[in-house]
Length: 197
Image (cartoon, rainbow, N blue to C red; front, top):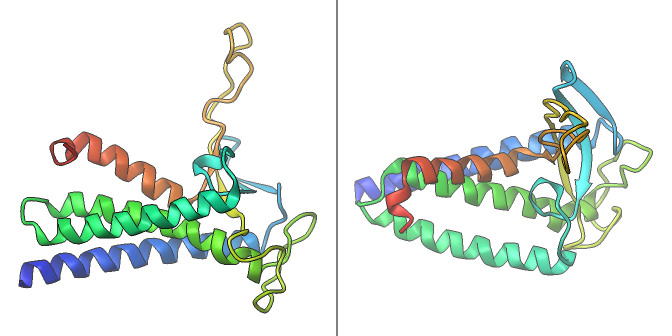
């Protein structure tokens, strides 16, 4: 029982820490930058570039907003269910549980944007957004847009290459929540593949 409590405590702290970091970064970007504004961090290859999207990872837009948010809520409920099972079962190492916890935190971080940002922020279009009383924002409940900011245009492909020539290598703009999900999935595939079967 003590081991389960320790694993639960580590999981909860990890999820809370990741959500706080994610939301702090998004809040700072949203209240200090206009939509489309870009700030170089290390030359041209790493920039803080403020974009918003309907909630797909790395800014992809493929589904209706309410469908996507509803799907995310169901996915989070399922991840919580699995996480509870993993915490109670000794066969799952803490590293594996940490990866699942970070996937949960990433999903929750982006869900927060979708659920409440439209209600509490003014638009970022051609202005810096302001925090406003609930219901006076740019959208309604479930209609908030996800804030993305990390942009790594590492290089441009040579023009002579078919299909990708002249394009940017790794053009997506993403956020901390996306990174939590992606890095955790990669770590699970590399280090904990046997627990995924």
